[in-house]
Image (cartoon, rainbow, N blue to C red; front, top):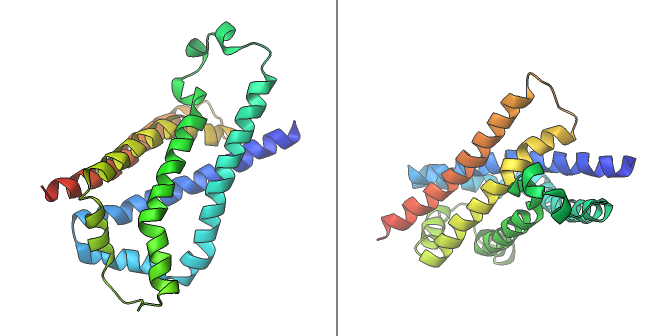
Length: 217
């Protein structure tokens, strides 16, 4: 029982860390709508800062993998622990679709991350550390807008953030509950904040993708 609670707390903490990263990533991406120079400068800093590259980035990758593995494990444990099957328990009346399908939406988001790594992270590693190119460049903005010329890739990007939004609608408030933050006064506010975050941040990413795609038409 204690180990199960510990896993839930660690999963929640990893989720909260990923929420911070997502917000930071959105702020940098949003710069691409205004100025390629600002986006290049911010991306260059994130891509070449030693602390970000060799401390925060490995922690981020570990957090993503841990969050996924812990989520799958807890889902299996919870399903095996139920004494009454879903069909007999009216899940639609007792829980939301998002809470019952966190694993599905999480896996869809993970598949998108794989594509995102293929598009940006792997080429970045190859460019800097394998080819040994100069760290001073302004390639980030052209690379970004080039990706959104493809309607299929843009569509996958948009759909992925729809799944992310569904995942966050339950995950945000669930993370706070798992770490023990429940209060009659503040819980409703956290729920509203979580809903706003789950809608606005993914929507912001969608807007960025669509604007860049439309600009090429």
